[in-house]
Image (cartoon, rainbow, N blue to C red; front, side, top):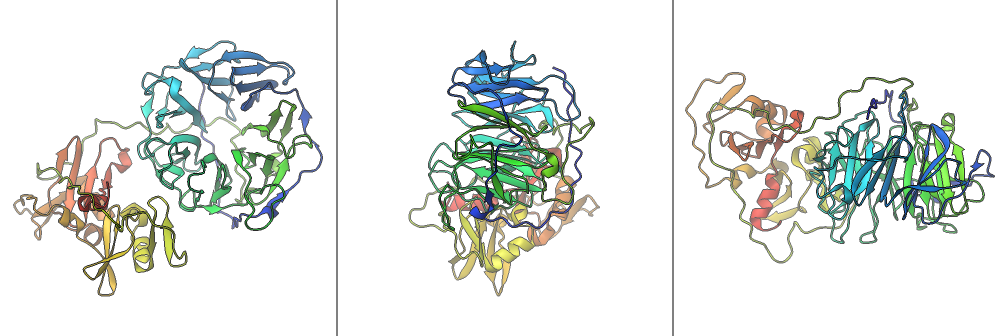
Length: 587
């Protein structure tokens, strides 16, 4: 399969001020059916349709019987892949030439067709566990169709291929166990940033529904601050899409959320409300999908018809001819051409969204490239051949393993409810609040990147106010916040032999106060991330275990892992979580 890849050449400027409100006033009705073309109709049981941008009368539909094709705009249909469980139709990217490519998952695995569903070939999935038959969600990196992501059914998980499916590699590190991936998008301005929406299969689940990867989709962290879903109502993220600089997340039952800081935080956005409902308590419509075009037009499918927004989600209008209004319709949108399809057994209607009518919340509208460009290579897979940091001398003592003794009764680590939003920030990733002086210190000294999310509420112990985080413990003493010597506490009783004094040089520094040194990449990281005030002095030399390398400090533990991307192989260890496990407060 020969298809060139392309990364959008985007010119994106400052974010325009935009207020996100959950209000029904932003919904308007589209008058008449001007611009809509009546095609044929769909067969029964269809849940997905797609069109071929190179041939407007060529349509594909996915139903219980598999994939059907129509070459006459829906007037007649014939099954071309019986038994397909999912379908992905990929048209050439802007500036590219070539045929439309179809992917399908069946009980026999992943298959692809390059000749309009006439013939199919198997796509190797030998590295996707347990097999390609369990792929529930399949999509490509938006600007590079050679990069595929496969979300797994039943067991959850995510796999990635950078060679059009010839080989697959696990890409679910950090995603919740058992969660299904339901949507995916990438940041065109920062292509290494990828976002997924998830659906949980059980009732006991974290309050995190969007995850972000900064390495092309290999490792993930929650990116859900501000997204709220009613607990245990089966809700999940049904779509992720961009309109200019704004990232939108549609949910099944709880409306639409928008982020103006590239997924760091979210606010409730304007959402169509159920017919006949008024007031602030009016429930949002059930949203099945969220789609977008490169120009920034947004389209959602709801239980009461399709809606579009041409102003970056600020307002919505009913989308479709009069025959489709207030009816559940199957919706398809070609993000390259702006061609929309609304379909049911009553009919199929087609419409081309005018990109010039879209006013995205940026000073310069985001447009696809007009010619093929040479993209940078996709993010590299982890390598296990790199050489870790080599300090002057090493210890051979492994990091201590916390003694896990469960504690009964209430614990400050037990999940909490949001409290006063003026004084506290609630983190649904861990279900804890952070406020007052602790919040000020956390924000001023690196926030989640330095300390992680809070793992407890603020509590008092021996007359000292304190709070645990993933990588630290804050204490309030003598009118100021200080960092506890948590690293020293965790290795208390473990002997790390001091090394003899030596004159320090620029890349190898000896600390006489502790009898240890820091060198190489660990020294560079220590200098760039807080030095003694935030990390403390070294309490050991670096040592290796299971292919990784560690070094203890008074307030931290540095870790070097070969499986992480080259630019972020060194990370801060989760010593706050380790300390809580030792106390029996965390499992």
